[in-house]
Image (cartoon, rainbow, N blue to C red; front, side, top):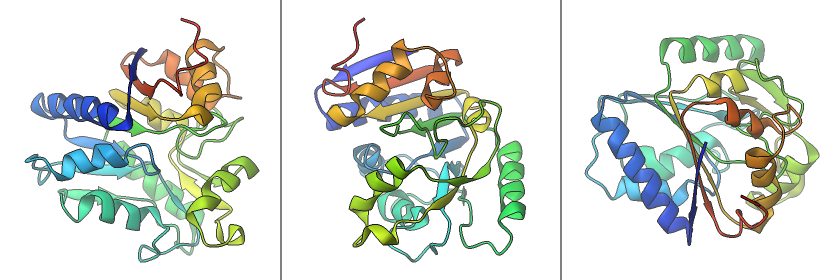
Length: 235
């Protein structure tokens, strides 16, 4: 695990962008994408670049249950606004949170991931150490699944909604095994509120109670964090 401490989110985005550019130059064909605030500057760098994604496939980590792609809080909408409208991909996959049969949708998405092994996976991290929507206690061997979101995750996401009651209580998420199957993983985290999760991820034991700690077992992981997120690291 390589940890890079940066001064700002903009600096972190530039480093992540350079890593992506190098992977694309050496043949990466499938990108695993994340939503949330951490990758926004990274996506801005991509939009402003001359990179061509017409032969690249994207696969997103997760999607809320109950929101359609026209909802401005859905992850499909987020990806369109932040990336896809400016940089269309050969094919872009997201879970369908409006599927009438959620169990079948989970199986469909696992099939998508099996057919499109991820070369370069972008991650954020939750305050409780979740990656994707794999909450504490999620099994390390888990595949795509339907998630009941933890109260802390619902609370953290409430800032994006007009009313806290509007925050979805479930999501479809890649499992930890799906994430760990990516060849390269780049996790970005910014702000003091992520410091405890980063310390547990980097220096704590590998435990399902801190889902991101499993990244210690991956052979090619880069953590890009600012000084606030790194403030509790001792090494």
